Amino acid sequence: MASWSFPSSSSCVAVRPILLDRVSATEPSWPLMLQAAGLAQRNGSKLALSTAGRKALASSQASVLGTIWNKWLKSSLFDEFSRVDVIKGQKSKGRVMTALAPRRAAINGILRLCPVGAWIDVDDFSRFMQATGHTFDVTHNPWKLYISDAQYGSLGNNGFHHSWEILQFRYLLCVLFEYAAALGIIDVAYIEPTEARNDFGDLWGTDDLEFLSRYDGLIYFRVTPLGAWCLGSVEDYTPTPIQPSVRLSVLPSLQVNVVGGSPSTEESLTLDTWAVEATDKSWRLDRQKAVGAIEKGCDIAEFRAFLQSREDQPLPETVESFIKATEKQGKALKISGTALLIDCENAEIAAMIATHRETAGLCIRAGDRQLVVRLENEEKFRNLIRILGFGMTV
Image 1 (cartoon, helix red, strand yellow):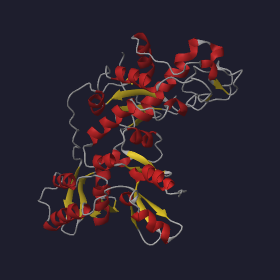
Image 2 (cartoon, one colour; image 1 turned 135 degrees about the horizontal axis):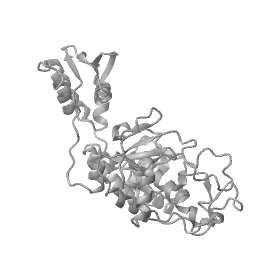
Image 3 (cartoon, helix red, strand yellow; image 1 turned 45 degrees about the vertical axis):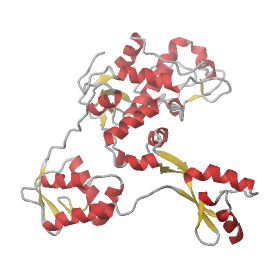
Image 4 (cartoon, one colour; image 1 turned 90 degrees about the vertical axis):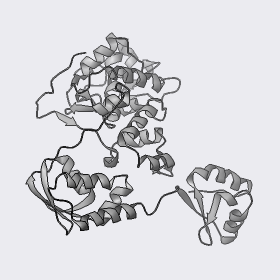
């Protein structure tokens, strides 16, 4: 497999790994991966952390990311190929799409062979997969898949010589960009997808398409040290410490000033996590922000080390007190579960359900007409109240 120097082009964007405490709701893969790993569960139309998810907040990011990746490999929750939404017919009747686990296993296996830290052309990677037999199928029947029109645009019309570039390769790009990169398994280099690839122009119905998938702009990737560990290529992983690029002055007033150098992106993010920015070169430690960071699983002891490594003098006593008090207060309450709040038609129904021998252990009263039920007990609770003759609607 050929390795490449990273292209120095202003149109090419390198995407760094996304950490757990910086998850964006716009990342469509994250909610799916968290559910596949058992770290989140549906609560009506929203997602809530599961018991395992809350425990994961106190675990190392590397171990959590590794767990998510390995559980996602076996999950059947979502077919990533549906994100290539130009290709229709994926949910047609019959066995159209293949099982997910073999596809992912093929990609995972070849990623394990990649050198760590070397930029790799995705087209070379694709050819290497085919040459070494690490292949997979996306569909049982390409005639069911089509672009624009089910009859004229059927992919079966063009024969199997198109299948890898149009089907398997687009699936590969999606997995690399939206899943492996999101977890920090790889870094990616991406350009605008418009006219990035010209391998689909002879397909019927593509005359007006500027790209076949949103992932067509993926050009290069490289396996990260974290990725090599998650993939099982190496036995140990030690996060690379952030090298200080600034000198700080930490004042008794809880003010943090830059007195030398300029903060890197990582340093600015760290300060913004625990403090309120006053100017472009000063922050003030903030109790509310710091408690919020601890709630998300951040370790204030690491922040203390961050400050001390950039300050020539010992931290002021007021700052030490702030850190100790915040650590204690940030863990003062603990979520023991997620619950449903249920309104009953009247107080008599609420009392009957709350005291009935079958349902009493599954709910508690919350006022005259309301009951609280743990989310994990919802299905059992529903079944029992139906036996009692009651139904529960949203």
